[in-house]
Image 1 (tube, helix red, strand yellow):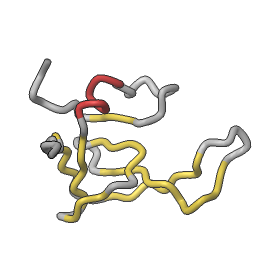
Image 2 (cartoon, rainbow, N blue to C red):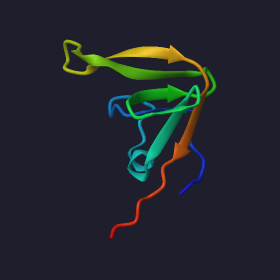
Image 3 (cartoon, rainbow, N blue to C red):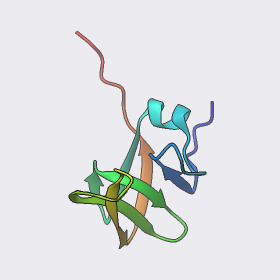
Amino acid sequence: MTDSLPDRLSTNPDSPYYDAALLERGVGIRFKGLEKTNVEEYCVSEGWVRVAAGTAKDRHGNPLTIKLKGAVEPFFQEKKADG
């Protein structure tokens, strides 16, 4: 398993940028210096993230997203020890 994150990653299984193994490992995103938990997709080289736009859904039942531009820093989340 690699210790580097891809330039682009999505949480949507229908996306060509979806990677279940990486998502299971736990990926966090810092956007403009703040940690975000609602990121649907990101691209480091182009400097954007897609986040859900409230509870709105498209006609296929997927959440509507908004593209925000700024500095994107993906990282692996630390595993919390049980007990």
